[in-house]
Image (cartoon, rainbow, N blue to C red; front, top):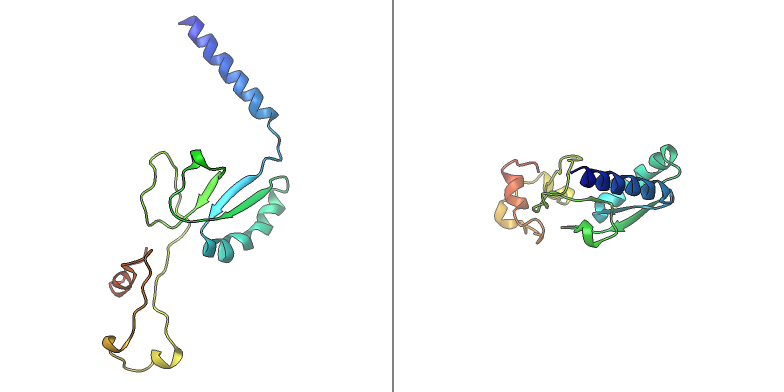
Length: 137
């Protein structure tokens, strides 16, 4: 037992030494949904760099499931529309608002649902039903 503990502490000390020798210039690789990256993340990078000037950030555009063990990504910002690996830690950044978009002249007219063409996306097949029922994701 004593020998096992000595080996374990020896490995921990070796690991700590290696971590401390790691170059501080190792970039933080962030994968992010393209729209979130353009509208939210990139505008916030100036403030981040002001607070953490020594951290180099590399951005990777991507969405959906990510396998951290098979990629060089350290952090992923995603929508919450698929199952996460239980090993990952997820933090909600905000609510997603889904709603219709129409021409200004159609907004004020009494147009029946049958006259409108509803556009759909394969990533949000229930978006119209969610919006019509008042669901906020």
